[in-house]
View 1 (cartoon, rainbow, N blue to C red):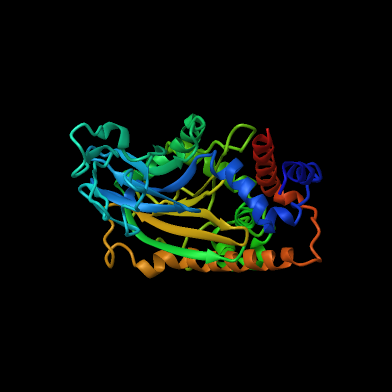
View 2: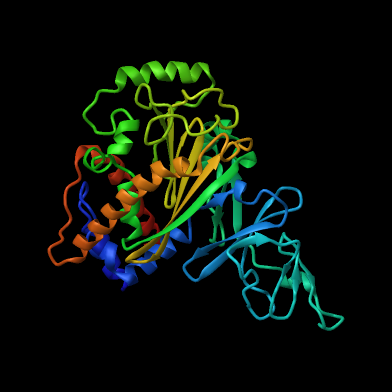
Length: 396
């Protein structure tokens, strides 16, 4: 797709309306989107709780790229392309594991966790190892969340850190425990997944479990008085309550809102799931909802965290990873039941996945035309506008 065609598509974007079909289905346009959005912004990769020990690693696959996320000897987090500097072989052949050293399986070049080339066997005496370290990518962490950027120059991480830190700090994710990780592949454009999680216009009809847990999710209940009362309690307990909106130049959204009275946690029966996480002392911290464009979503209650990582595969395919985090002292079978822990978001996630796939099937047809967003879909508008602005930057 030529630059002029992309410019024309963007210029036709009508404020307050969904995107034209090509933005959801055209592979060439996705290639431009990849360069202007995914290759330039900070991407959520995972949680430090996934790599608690030195040498623990996991692979984050991004299109043709594979990134090794590995814990250093002093607790640092490093990120490298999974590509040997010798002849390009993949180094880590498993999606996760532990490696005292990163050793290429092809010719046994040896790298330290920070990417430094330690040994290149049988190379000449004048061979300069310093010129052949692993190619690293930008990596930063905020209270146990790992973000990477594959651009040559990464944007400033300060706004992400400033916005998320007050909400994340009480959970002590760096010392938390991963209870479960589950992966899903959806036949839907990645933006439809993002749009779905930016509104609750659909919640009343589609999510009975979610609406039973969260007051106001059905958009038929007035929550102002309860929210104001709860905010005073949360603030007295030192919990963050300031709404963070995505504004020009930023990528982060953060909010705290109340559970339905009598509900203790995100569970099908409304009862607590596990012991409170980190510094939480009770089950009255409400819900925190965190977003960072383009691929991070998180919901958390007092006793557990659920993160969602969205990754584009192609125009019609999106990978989604769910991760459940609990307090480091929680013992399965004693403090929590794994099935109860994952049940709520597996049900809700499956409902959302079906909605996204249904949405994509309709958009693929000749009958699709951009439609108007409802006022309650203001956060979808925010996300779509952000995507369009990022593509405009890419054109420039």
